[in-house]
Each structure stands twice: as structure tokens, then as C-alpha cells.
Image 1 (cartoon, helix red, strand yellow):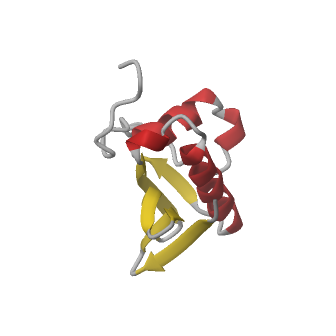
Image 2 (spheres, rainbow, N blue to C red):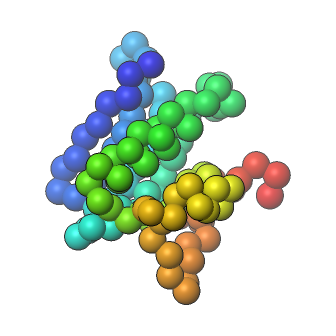
Length: 111
């Protein structure tokens, strides 16, 4: 599964294609040195296979390579950051008004 990448006018996406259809994506926007990761999605029949984690890892590498701070607006990304705050402290853009993860529109499992 190869992760592909596109960036147009400050909007970016990491995505995975299978045959001719997109099966997963991580969408973000970049302004100055801040990357707002606002959506992660995997086709329902492929959930639980670690696909979102691969996209997340690619986004983290990209942020570190480009010295971006990340706003985790997506519930999935916020949950990953919260599970290991020290591991992402170098890229986590933290403010008093922390994102809730609601931008993605997908509630974390178990909520």
C-alpha cells in the first residue's frame, strides 16, 4: 500500500489508492509553519487494519521534515497525540483552546 501525497494552495492530502479508488485519506491545511490536520478517513470495510496509522505516521514525518507544528483537529489525530504527548511534543501545536477533534466529524470509538 503506497501512500501518495498532494499539496495545492496550502491544502494537502496523504492518500492511498487501491485499484482505481481512494480507500483512505488524511487531509490538512498549512498556513505559515502550522499544519492543521482536520480529517482522517478509511473505507469502513478496511477499518482496523492500521491504514490510518500509516497515514498518521507519514503526516508526522512530513511535519518534522518541514518544521511544522500540528493542530490535531481530527479526533483520530488528537487521540494519537494524547496517547503519547511526549512523543509528539516537538510538533504538537498546543494552546489554551485545545482542539476537540470534532472537525473530522467522526467520533472516536467508544464515545
